[in-house]
Length: 455
Image (cartoon, rainbow, N blue to C red):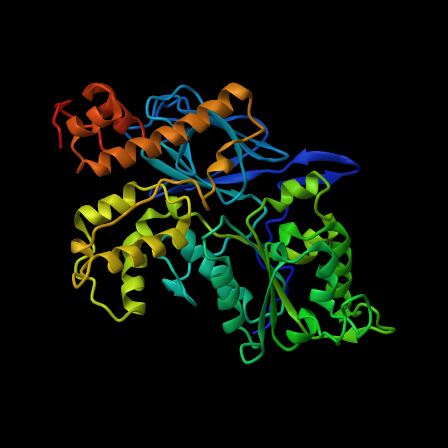
């Protein structure tokens, strides 16, 4: 199957340069789970709410009459909450005003929408719920699978963005395994783990005696991966001088080992990944503009686990299946606990939680019988990313506080068996205040009757 790389999904930067000036591009807001279709977001604010005077009317009881407004900027879509009752959420955090990139999922009360670039071709979601080792029944994951299914048979370079733990290497391996290069080597290079003065040798090789300590010849990753796929992990950590040489290697399909007199031809497909926002790095001149577009022939973003909680039962089932165990029914209190967690470590954290639970549960291996330990530590997560320097100090601080508040309340509530009285005592808060925090962060549903119960 041959694919013209110009026709595959291109998501590029969130702005377009025209004669030296940067102009905003337009985006599309897609309503999920509703019959309404797509709404174009331009520079003029798009009003969203339950009121009939809104440009986008959301028929949801948790949506305020004038809930939020969205507008396109050179950096992405600016989302401004208009003092709504149930809040506007992005990446599990209540926001007042924030700029989000294409591919983001937003929650307005109980309504869920996705933001995509208006100039990105629409790709119907895959009918499959798995691609390689990646599993997902959500629309976001099946859209990702559809793109990768189309892309893999070609030799187009692929750029994968996603938070730590979302499965970027799994995606790269799946692309390789579904390509005509599957029988060839799959070579992984972690750009963040190599010192700057050795990166050129690591990628392109060196001849014996090229520098102090070069006591033997080294092929380099490009040559080792020839006939197969080279996976450049954490590409955003690559120094600028090495970026220029990487660009030349991609364009010419040749590399020149350090100390060599002539280049060496290679036949290597490159898949790159990063947890950083390369578009912003390009704007800050921390990453080469031309290398970005050479790599982002196909540009995909892996959604964080908190944005696809509907996939939890299937991810748990897959975890059991790979260990040839029967999980029994995947529901009940344990599934509720998983759904309430914010998953800063994403799928990797889920795997660790399940591994620990099985190890600590002895002979009891059924999902319902496991005792789950859900960490709230920020170590290894992306808690620092809650700080958005593009916001005013007051709004950035509020966003940080909301994230901490949600995680703290969820942890204390779960630790006391979802008993409001005992959890409130532990937190040093009144029951009423603690309940309001649970409602605020959608950890429990506000009862229609307004009844005051402990469970």
